[in-house]
Every structure is written in structure tokens, then in C-alpha cells.
Image 1 (cartoon, each protein chain N blue to C red):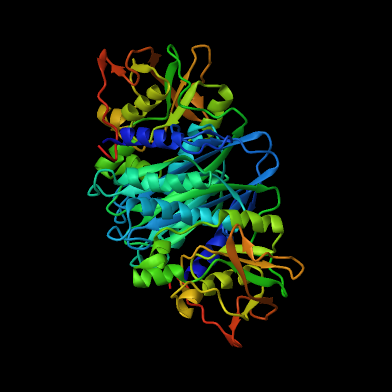
Image 2: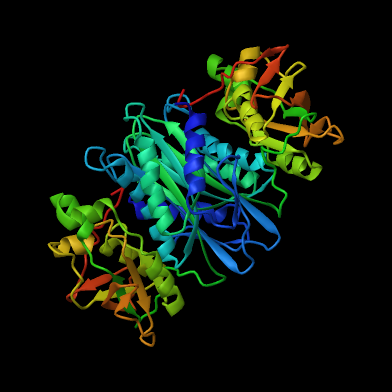
Length: 301
Length: 301
């Protein structure tokens, strides 16, 4: 099949999927065209999914890789409290993949896109010796209302959605619910939008592990944090997996003590895990009275 | 150097570069934030630059690869008649690259970004065994005014900017101006904006070769084309290189016979090369009375 035919097929798949009315031109031109609404801000993110880094062809189906590629970017929209609008998908694949692999990748991606009302508006397609995907997502928030990392204040409570360590535990054990969770992460879109309406002070998603991501939130907020209670652990996960394991894609957020944070958001448990503290060394995290070593996933460590 | 330090350095580089006032949050959060203007449409594109496909580390400097990565995406904005707003850059690099390579890549990219007033607003950074870049660009056009591929009508004249075949000729000979041109393509931003103001009927950029790209424009416009005069050839280039060679990044456009198209746009020559024709087989291109074979670059052929 030639590129032109593949693109024509993807275009039919995309046009059969969710179509946001502000996307006035999707696949088929040099660019996608968006007509923004006057009262909104737009947020943008892009994330790689690389063979041998984020998945292996032996253990992840094409549909799971497509799902994960979009889930990583949607999770960043969730962290901003944004509603998804559209995605662009750059995909490079080896000639050795079996027929139908590209189709299955897009079907996995589009199933998640449909769930979160995201329009596939374009992208790029190329041959390469490994599978590489890069997914760009655009979301909308009411003007001035995006959740940011830098808003946490000393005295704010620190929370996470769901449970921690499932993804790392799944990757280590390759079985059960944790392994499924690793292969099909769920972006917390509904929870992010609920947090935005609640008016929390800061938020981010947990992609590289709590210890590293919380450090980043604290650095942006020029503060520190104290973890002062038990973490909500995924069944079977160790404390190390919960503290340092990547790819949980839960939301980490802070809220003023005056904000009434519910026990669940859209059916998902919310747990208070600590407090934002003033510190002479921004980024310091304390656990049981001692500084927590930063051990999350760093591509360049 | 750890990822956090690299990102901190890129953030300083980006903040020292062009900053579009509508980009209200750049590098440093889960997403970039854009506050769109009420009277504008936004256009979006993404393009891969892959080691061994679009460049070789032996022949292209890091700065040239950064330049080319952004140039490919900016060229798509030019094709829509758009003014650049921001870019997001996903970059994966092997651990074996020499120190300073990432810096040089971004410096090459940011020099072109400065020239075209494009803000570096975010991206992703990862380790991989080959160099992979994916650059997303966002541009603005007055509402409803984006140039599209589907507007060409039978009887319209067909034009190109600049000269054809330079990039393919440069790649074949690896010397002189053509080789420099291959390594440092120039997105035709000023020309695209001028064409939009002129009210041309259709436009696209020439990335995969005239024969393939013109076919795409004709397919979208449900028409054909007749090439009825000499092509503007780059010095030394063969007719095959001008007809089928990729990566010239010139603009291909059509205009009603009533539109007065100037001989130059922002100092760059414009040449009429043919006519849009009615045909029972959309996408047919005729040259000297015979159908032109489609031989441009197809990743999946």
C-alpha cells in the first residue's frame, strides 16, 4: 500500500471518529485548521512513545501502543484541567511489521480518542527501522483557568488520584491488573476538569514517578513538600514502586486548606498524602523526617 | 547532565528567543498555554526528521538538523499563508553523541525560529538509539483566510516560487549551492503570507517532489493539470530532479486568470508553469501532451 492510500484510509477512520466543531479542516491539507472560541485558552503538549523505551513489540499489541501514545499526551491535558480538542499523530514504522499493524495502532488510538472526544486532525507518516510515535494534543480551558505547576503555597495539602506503583509493578511482574494498567494507562481527563472547577492551587500528572515529579512541582512553586501519611498503593506494589515508579498517569495536586476536596472524583479515589512546606532549598521532599532521594525516571541520568 | 538540567538550559535559550505575546506559558509546565485572538484561525502541522531518512550525522551538522527540523514544519505554515506563532520540539538522541550536540541542534533551530518570529514553547526529550525529531508548528491567519489545497479551478494558472530540483541535485552531488540548499532549506513564510493577501485559489509546499505534490493538489481540487512551459530549474539540476526531486520547500499555487500575480514575491522569482484542467481522472498531470508518471518521494512505495 502506498503512502497516499494509507493516508486516505486514515482520513476515513478519522472522519468516522469524534469531530470537534472548532476543527474546521482535518487530514488532507498542509495543516489542520482550528477556529478558536473567544473565551478559551488553548493548551498544547507533545510526547514520544519509542520502541524499546516505552514499549516492546513482543509484549504490546499495536492497539495498546496506539492507546498509550495518545494516553500520555491526554494525561498532560488532564494535568492542566483541559478538555481535549484534537490530536496530531506522527508515526514511523519499519517495513517488517505485519500488514494491518498501522491500522490496529490507529484503531487503538481512536478508541481512546472517541472516549475523550478528541479529533484526529492530522500528523505525519514515515518509514524507520523502529517504531516511533509522537502525539500532539490540544485542549481548551476557560480563559485564565488552566491548572499550573507553580501555584502551590506552603500550608497547601498535597493529594493524588487513584493508586501509585501499578505501572512499575506491572512492568516488573508482567501479569495481572498491574500489567494491564501498564499497557493501557488511563488519562484522568474527567478528574482534571473537576479539579479545575474546584479551584486547586497546582497540578501535574505523574509520568516519571512521584519523587521526581513532586520535586518538579515544588521547584516550579519554589517550595518543598512533606509526605506525612501512607501512600495509596496499588495492590502488590512496593513502597519503592509507589514512590519512584513511572507511568502511573495519576494526577498530583495541591489545594489550600480552605478547599474542600472530595474523597472521590468521577468515581476515582483521592488521597491526601502530605503538605507543601516552606524551605530554603526548593524541591526538597521529606518522608518520615528525612529527605527523600529523587529516583524517578530520568532519560538522561 | 540530567534531563532536568538540560530542560532548564533549553528553557533559558527559549526565553532569550522570540516570544509571541499570545503564548502565555512556555516551557516548564505539563502543557504550553496559548491565548488566541478572536479574529484568527490557527493552523497546525507536524513533521518528522529522522536519522538516515532526512539527514545523516556524517554530513549534517547538529545546527543544520535543527534548522531543517523547524524548516519542514514552517514550510507547511507558509503553504497555508500563515504567520508562525510557536513550535513544540520532540527530540530523541543517542547517548553516544558528543557533548554540545543537543545545544547546537537547538541553536540551529532557534536561529531559524528568530528569523520567522516563532516561539519555542515546549516539547519532549528522550534517549533513543537514533536521532529523531518531530516539530509541531502553530501559525495564525485571519479568520477564513487560510490557503488550502482544494480551491484550484479548471482554467486557473499554476505557479511555483523559486527554482526546482536544487535539493535533489544537492543530495546527488554533495557540493555547491545545491548541497547547501539541501541542508538548509528556506521556508517561504513571507511569500505564503503575500499569496494569502493576493487571494490565490490553492497552495501547498513542495516537499515530496512536483509530480507527487501537484497530483495531491489536483486530487484535493478534483481536477488535473497541464505543465505547458519550461520549469524554473535550479543551476545544474536535471529535468527529472525538478519534476520528481523532494525537499525543495518551494510553494506551488494556483490563481484565477483574473488575479495579477507579480513576477517576484519578497525578492523571490515566481514562475507560471501550467494550467489547471478539467479531467475525468482527477490527479492526472500532462507534460508535452503525455501523462506525467508520478515519481516523487513516497515513504511507503
